[in-house]
Length: 565
Picture: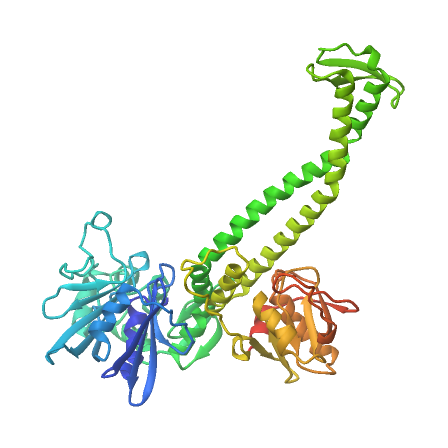
């Protein structure tokens, strides 16, 4: 039910309490469809996340650390010009619609008070954030500018008049009175007919209200249902098909099981959307990087097929030597100017063998040509094998990059991109500027606490892996990595760990690898001092001997609950 009209009606109670009369201090756009507005109210900072993601449009207070990009978008620059330092006077919902208006007042360059409205429309793929002047009703700018040909209902461009989208009229359950309900009862005589006329309810809310009406088709039943939205809490509920849903109340008439309950609805929303949001944000940030990885994988795969064919041809070159030898034996039988001849093959019980000839060459020169071709192919075998090994190593390298992307959080993508620039796979746009080195510290490294209280570090990309294993970790600590599969370097910070500690750390290593969703994953473990990096090896590549192994099955919930940061 997240962010239907009733949910928004309920959520605004908490947003109004925290943000009304707050000063807007910072604005940034970390991703294409997301805005962060930082308010300060009574000495406390509140971070408001607004997302117009088509699948998960939402607005709530977040405590997550979301990166502030180096350069601001045009829309953010406009928002900063008009709203930075402004006071949020009011937050109002348009009826029971999925439209939230934030009313701001600010001072212009002449010191005069001006009023603006930031309209947040959480309407699926039509979601948008629109800034307009309250006095003139003129749009100043929008997060998504819409071509008039794509939307003939209203004009969504700067300087146009702001208009509401087409709205469906219905009953507002939050304001209806007893007498109004009685009049409607005479018109809509069945509970289902009545429920379908209420505005702001998604399918789950309608089913729940229908349950109330089936039990007692009265105004009291409606008020009892609406009371669920007076003090919203966060409920994550699961269907019989193991699908998680979010509610601000606990339904009575839906067949759902409570997975999580929190009195802080904003924190519950934050946690509920974190995994989905991270995947979407990583997808946006990693799009260019993934394109490079995919293109390189395609080129390398084609090259490997071609090299394998060349190797097969070289290793089967004996026929060229045989043809040269047979021509030398039967030179007197070869007439100048012919293009082919059939001669007995004394290597195969004198069965006839067809030999192509160049009519411009003498018989002896044709024989020599076969010997040269044979020798050339034999000499190429070593080179081709070296190229095959190099191509396979490069494919394995890009496999590690893809695994790093799959395991990444939004802030990790910059380091992966930097690695590909340094390796020459991504061209630096401005050659006059030196690439800014992203410093790796312990704060960048994912940290987990085991049941025993011992700490585990996880590197989530090749640069972090190198830094963690070769620079940060105590040489006596235990190093873990999935066997023969791309994955994270994992450090168990203990000199004498128990097998229980090793098993838990191995599960973490298995989860942060290409085998994340596999069972019985083999994980190697060895002390850090035995890890070596070959000279000239690519980032993240190390070698080791003398390791032990353990087989584990990573379970997401068991692993992520141990994470500290």
